[in-house]
Image (tube, rainbow, N blue to C red; front, side):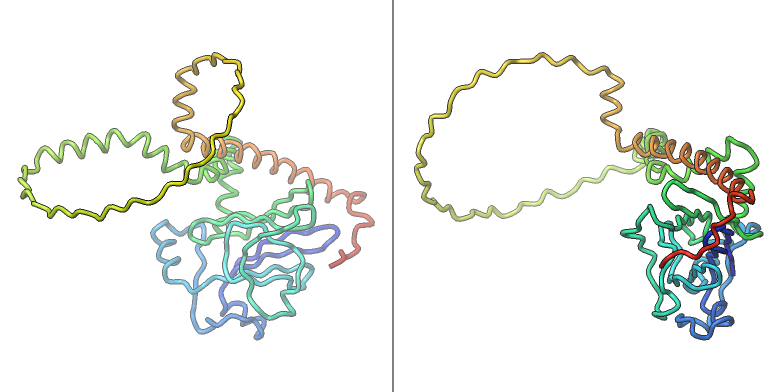
Length: 292
């Protein structure tokens, strides 16, 4: 089981726990999962991509639990990249929730999760209004490896979120770059294929019935003749025409760059907030529990 944690001066210890039904049932028999007999293994920072794919295909469904100061708030049936409310009643309803994240009030305490395509939790952030604080990933997890890589240089700190933010623009760029190469390979292959003469099929001539429908005579309305002024629009430069033609490619790239810049800014805000929480005067008088 993986446990992501953050000590909040006001709310206490916030935990995001990821595991399988069998792991949670060993601590709490009331855990609502149905796969307690199936064994699963979470990927670690030492697993290769092949091993991670094998685990992803053979593991049972992952579960996720959110706790605040030891009290269960939510229990989810999957791990996804999503925003989730922090407080809830997950210990009372006894049912698994779907991590949809629709309607989350960003001014209230909530969590922002980022997961890989193999359902591996990569980062967790506590957010409340403008406050952004990063959780500490568990040692040996994929999230810990991601953080070590990002902390190795300021360039990687920006490039890794930027690459994650590219999304569908990545394959679009690949098509744009590799498209001419693939086209030439296909043309070469077609040269080696024999020419086949396809038979000439004589299809029957189907005559559809013709129908004359009555057309009503509408009255002619004398619309006023308005002389609008004419404007001569300047010709767009060539680079702008190219940009408009390939907007579906460069727009995700621009979005990815923005994600990288925002991630770098949020990391600095997180470090500043953690430093402020470490000061006695910043944490004094903030131990009251929040209203649910």
